[in-house]
Length: 422
Image 1: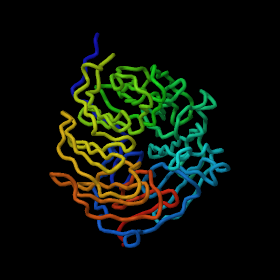
Image 2 (image 1 turned 180 degrees about the vertical axis):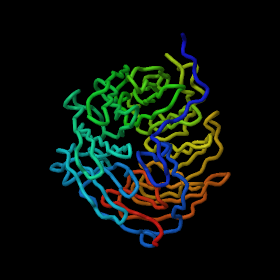
Image 3 (image 1 turned 60 degrees about the horizontal axis):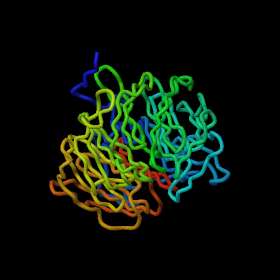
């Protein structure tokens, strides 16, 4: 019997009893770049309101995660050439409780890159980390290594022009990683408890040079009675059964001229059964109605825009709207059903570009430039109103984290915590 597309498709994440207490993955508790309800700082400076900053033992670009009273992140430990992949644990005073080395790191090529770009994900009991070296590891909250494997030793070297950026996700009791690069590409699911391969499926398309490279992170959605892993890269958006990895549907048409160097960095976001997909090196954006079976390219494409998009920073999506920030700080708010522009504005000019993805907390959008300028912007009907602007003496690619009424910023050199003193 032909599969009938469900009317409602929802994004699925782990059960979290108190969202405001946890930030279990990159892009937050709901995976959409939106913070749980809270009273987050707005008026502060790099000194007034800075609760602490803790020096990091090496370079890394991953966004921290939080579970209750612990903060976790990946980082190089030691110098680039001699350093190791590491997982760090801090408490809320900024004290480093433990750090675990997981083997020799593969340092970054890009000036802002590193061997520790993917973010950790947690199920509330275990930590799952993935590195440019190919190492995947599970640890408990005390820093004990539960299992460790290396995807590149198993399946071959990853060929990417820049540094690995895809974060792992959790689905159906497995840690799922998308490996999309200039060689044989695949999805692999590792059992969360043992690290054994639950399934592995190929995901390959014929692409022009570098267009098959993807740094995006998959998403997990629910279509009726099954969970679907949505993967973006190689000029295709695909949906895979989370139990088996089998491809259920695919949507192409993102590179009809077969242009070179259309690698993708920013991840898609999903709301109301619509995926907002950035592509074309920050020049194109599409709205795709996900779900169904087979090739949905013609039926699923709702809208396309040119000149309104993002290359690196993943959008925010909530309440039928998406907020998009490009390299230079141009900001758009679009209706996700139609792609119609609600407003366009821009962040005040400054040094550096936006690698970090924006985060929305209530009605306030938080963004940080690579060279340390942090903007706190109120969303108004016609655009944004800058409420505060702070300069930090550090470099930033990680996304701001909002939890327990505090803000965490991960720089090249320090981990920062902003909040009100008790």
